[in-house]
View 1 (cartoon, rainbow, N blue to C red):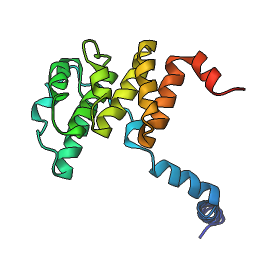
View 2: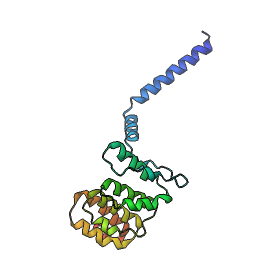
View 3: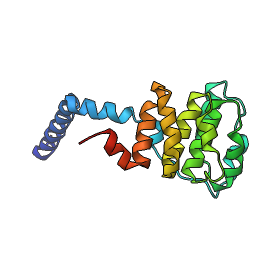
View 4: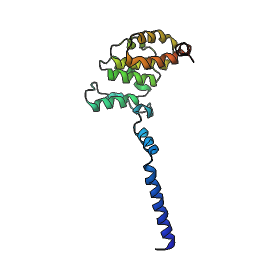
Length: 180
């Protein structure tokens, strides 16, 4: 082997050694673990306004994990042409269907005419959580009294969402609740 080839092999081995050493670093493990555990919602999907309606194939039952995944994916990729279908899904008895349809309508900014007060009063927790997030997304401070009454119910599953929504909708109220 020539001297030049020997130097190339040595450099490659040294580089691999650094790579293996770097992979044993705890900081790298933390970064890899954080990257693997990203929630699905943090990965945006492009809207499908030009495609055929993806909601035409939405299963009416989410009994199986495959059907639930299909519903979530279809709602995440729904476009403006799917708004009428999403609105009809709000009357579904399955909270998974209602929650994902409401989240899609918030993303599409198509909440006009939807009674968020009724959804906030719904007995199903998932529907109420999505209603709180929808109220927050509107930026309308008229929802604050309804959110405050929801806070008075002392539901721990809703408390953080309600606090964030009220803080977003009424920053002055937040300053009164949380002094500097």
